[in-house]
Image (cartoon, rainbow, N blue to C red):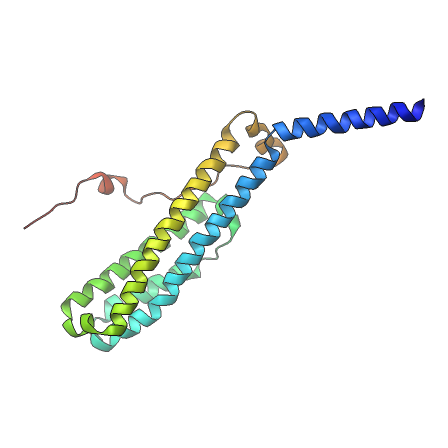
Amino acid sequence: MGRSWWQTTAITAITVTALSVSGCGYNDLQGLDEDTKAAWSEVINQYQRRADLIPNLVATVKGYAAHEKETLEGVVNARAKATGIQVTSEMLKDPAAFEEFQRAQAGLASALGRLIAIAENYPNLKADQNFRDLQSQLEGTENRIAVARKRYIDRVADYNKMVRYFPTNLTAKFLLHLEEKPNFTVADEKAVAKPPEVKF
């Protein structure tokens, strides 16, 4: 009788544990955590693609506009700063590191914008097939970055909701020790909200 009672108790305990764990969101939280890491990896992949294009773009512009030294150096320095940040999935747990990464990428985007604007002053550069190809690849990469960031934003929103909703917030906090992940923000929300000025 002792053995069957222990077996029945063990099976009951396992069943109750399995049912309670399935209702606490443990697996859902783990899945969403992995989804956010995968989406983050794609964002990094696209930023790396952009960083890889920059040396060729700078070299092409340098051939036509060597005296635009300050702008060229600005792009090179911004790229060095952006690629110099050690990027890991652990960054998603550190809002300050995430913000530093975001600032570096914004600085690089700004420097690239100035570099592309230089081309307007050099008709021969604008006509150069290599420059046009690089510019097209860069524009495509910027679009890919926007898509990757959007996917990451969506994954983080789903994840953060699960971390905050009851009862999964209890599992997140006490069992898995998970916290909300940082998300991309706009550097100057007032500037974005302001309509652009159009002059003719």
